[in-house]
Image 1 (spheres, helix red, strand yellow):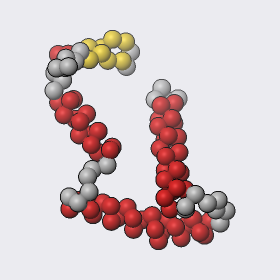
Image 2: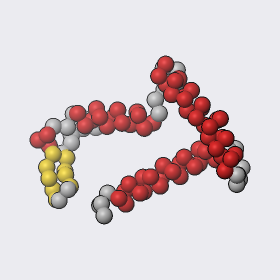
Image 3: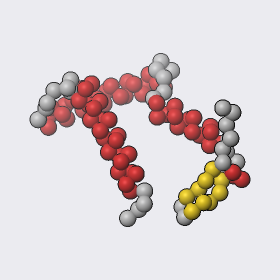
Image 4: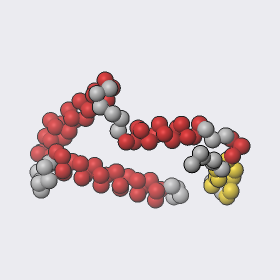
Length: 103
Protein backbone atom coordinates (compact mmCIF):
# COMPACT_ATOMS: atom_id res chain seq x y z
CA UNK A 1 0.00 0.00 0.00
CA UNK A 2 1.27 3.47 -0.84
CA UNK A 3 2.29 5.68 2.11
CA UNK A 4 0.46 8.56 0.40
CA UNK A 5 -2.88 6.73 0.24
CA UNK A 6 -4.22 8.00 3.61
CA UNK A 7 -3.43 11.59 2.60
CA UNK A 8 -4.99 11.10 -0.83
CA UNK A 9 -8.08 9.59 0.78
CA UNK A 10 -8.44 12.48 3.23
CA UNK A 11 -8.01 15.02 0.45
CA UNK A 12 -10.56 13.24 -1.73
CA UNK A 13 -12.92 12.92 1.20
CA UNK A 14 -12.56 16.65 1.95
CA UNK A 15 -13.28 17.69 -1.64
CA UNK A 16 -16.23 15.33 -1.94
CA UNK A 17 -17.65 16.76 1.25
CA UNK A 18 -17.21 20.32 -0.06
CA UNK A 19 -18.77 19.41 -3.42
CA UNK A 20 -21.74 17.80 -1.63
CA UNK A 21 -22.20 21.01 0.36
CA UNK A 22 -22.16 23.15 -2.82
CA UNK A 23 -24.48 20.79 -4.66
CA UNK A 24 -26.98 20.65 -1.80
CA UNK A 25 -26.88 24.32 -0.91
CA UNK A 26 -26.59 26.00 -4.30
CA UNK A 27 -28.26 23.69 -6.77
CA UNK A 28 -30.61 21.45 -4.78
CA UNK A 29 -31.73 24.30 -2.47
CA UNK A 30 -30.97 22.27 0.66
CA UNK A 31 -33.89 19.90 0.11
CA UNK A 32 -33.79 16.17 0.61
CA UNK A 33 -33.93 14.53 -2.78
CA UNK A 34 -34.32 10.80 -3.20
CA UNK A 35 -34.80 10.59 -6.94
CA UNK A 36 -31.82 9.91 -9.17
CA UNK A 37 -33.57 11.33 -12.24
CA UNK A 38 -33.94 14.69 -10.47
CA UNK A 39 -30.23 14.71 -9.55
CA UNK A 40 -29.23 13.94 -13.14
CA UNK A 41 -31.55 16.69 -14.38
CA UNK A 42 -29.99 19.22 -11.97
CA UNK A 43 -26.46 18.19 -12.98
CA UNK A 44 -27.15 18.44 -16.71
CA UNK A 45 -29.45 21.46 -16.80
CA UNK A 46 -28.11 23.64 -13.98
CA UNK A 47 -24.65 22.57 -12.78
CA UNK A 48 -22.82 22.05 -16.08
CA UNK A 49 -24.05 25.31 -17.68
CA UNK A 50 -23.22 27.22 -14.48
CA UNK A 51 -19.60 26.04 -14.51
CA UNK A 52 -19.25 26.54 -18.27
CA UNK A 53 -20.38 30.17 -17.89
CA UNK A 54 -18.13 30.64 -14.87
CA UNK A 55 -15.14 29.36 -16.85
CA UNK A 56 -15.99 31.71 -19.74
CA UNK A 57 -16.24 34.68 -17.36
CA UNK A 58 -12.84 33.82 -15.87
CA UNK A 59 -11.25 33.49 -19.31
CA UNK A 60 -12.64 36.89 -20.38
CA UNK A 61 -11.46 38.53 -17.15
CA UNK A 62 -14.89 39.37 -15.74
CA UNK A 63 -14.43 37.09 -12.77
CA UNK A 64 -11.33 36.41 -10.71
CA UNK A 65 -9.49 33.13 -10.42
CA UNK A 66 -10.72 30.49 -8.09
CA UNK A 67 -8.85 30.04 -4.83
CA UNK A 68 -7.11 26.86 -5.97
CA UNK A 69 -5.57 28.50 -9.04
CA UNK A 70 -4.53 31.56 -7.04
CA UNK A 71 -2.80 29.40 -4.41
CA UNK A 72 -1.17 27.23 -7.10
CA UNK A 73 0.38 30.34 -8.69
CA UNK A 74 1.66 31.51 -5.29
CA UNK A 75 3.26 28.11 -4.65
CA UNK A 76 4.90 28.06 -8.09
CA UNK A 77 6.38 31.52 -7.54
CA UNK A 78 7.68 30.56 -4.09
CA UNK A 79 8.97 27.23 -5.39
CA UNK A 80 10.96 28.94 -8.14
CA UNK A 81 12.72 31.07 -5.53
CA UNK A 82 14.05 28.01 -3.63
CA UNK A 83 17.55 26.99 -4.71
CA UNK A 84 18.56 23.38 -5.17
CA UNK A 85 21.33 23.84 -2.58
CA UNK A 86 18.74 24.52 0.15
CA UNK A 87 17.09 21.08 -0.27
CA UNK A 88 18.55 18.20 1.75
CA UNK A 89 17.42 14.61 2.25
CA UNK A 90 16.62 14.12 5.95
CA UNK A 91 15.14 10.59 6.00
CA UNK A 92 13.79 8.05 3.54
CA UNK A 93 11.45 9.92 1.13
CA UNK A 94 11.57 13.03 3.33
CA UNK A 95 13.23 16.29 2.35
CA UNK A 96 14.08 19.37 4.34
CA UNK A 97 14.01 22.79 2.68
CA UNK A 98 15.76 25.78 4.16
CA UNK A 99 13.75 28.79 3.13
CA UNK A 100 14.41 32.38 4.10
CA UNK A 101 11.63 34.92 3.94
CA UNK A 102 11.55 38.68 4.37
CA UNK A 103 9.10 38.67 7.26
